[in-house]
Image (cartoon, rainbow, N blue to C red):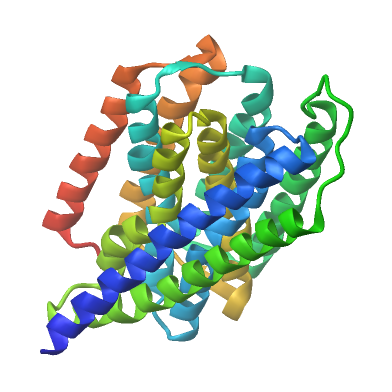
Length: 318
């Protein structure tokens, strides 16, 4: 009975996250129309911060509960799921040309950040000093993104139209309601995911890298399918890139600062971080070099992620 209830609540939390992600997409698209900002900028900042909130709240809740493996698995596993599974699906369904000028800065920033994280983790710790450096990186990312958006603001042939207060309130309320669903769903996932791990004698790290990492990537996955349906691929791409940058800087930085350090397991450093680097390069390099994505690229990312999950299921990292 306890297992059945935990599974039901886990699925309910996942449903909250998916529905909340849908509301965030709607509010982000409306925000883009109101401000005339680039959809890549909207996706990589407002959307990315919002969809990264489940990982942030979930990981903080896990650390304060003493589940460091769950927090690490959620953070790094979430980045792998977002880059390999979510971006892989997006590229598979929507391959094509990409505006390099809009995403090149984010691609470079993400790759540099990953190199820095791997360097910090060489001692199997993210220290509080490392955390401060990563949080500084988060601030730098917001500054550079805002500066970039001012030079790429979408032009309009029509004179500016006054925005009614009702539309602003509706956009804000949709955003906030989506955020509430995301945070509530995150708490339900971590609590019941931990119960499932205990009942099946699974490690917190394994649950963090699999069930919870995929679950907290649901907002980005929702963004992808909603954006494909509404033919707004730039929003999805910006959200995916921005989400991983924010997870790598704000989330890992905050976790490193909490309690003085964040332990990194040997298997995470030797396997998961290299997998993250590989899928990131596979996703980013064709965009940087050719200015487009290819269906084979998306399929390759999904296959790598499937093999990675098989490895986790066999090895069961501690």
